[in-house]
Image (cartoon, rainbow, N blue to C red; front, side, top):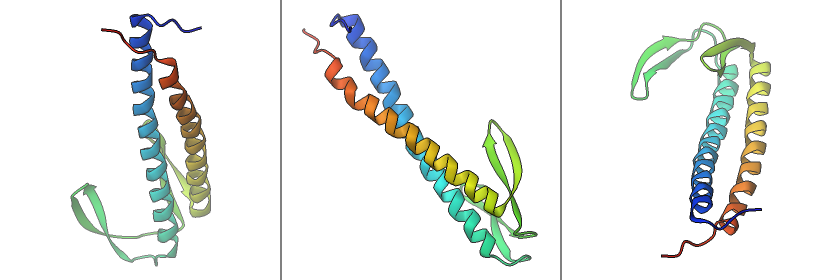
Length: 123
């Protein structure tokens, strides 16, 4: 059971804050995977040799040309990328969205229980 000592209250507040930050990061990841899925689906509709703008940074682009609409390189984490056919890439990204959404829902449930377990500090 939880103690209402100042030390355990501080620890619970810190855990609550860390989980809240992690929850926000998961929401960003869900959005990022969704945007990537949309981009892959739009790429599948493009014609080979179509001209595009290739981002070098978030505010710097160069002209480019689509060489193939059959496959894409997918970031699978920690700097690793794998080539996937368009349908496989869409399926992978959908899976990542659902997995992250499930984890975020579990985290949100945990976070919503925290305030009731944190006692009030007395001054």
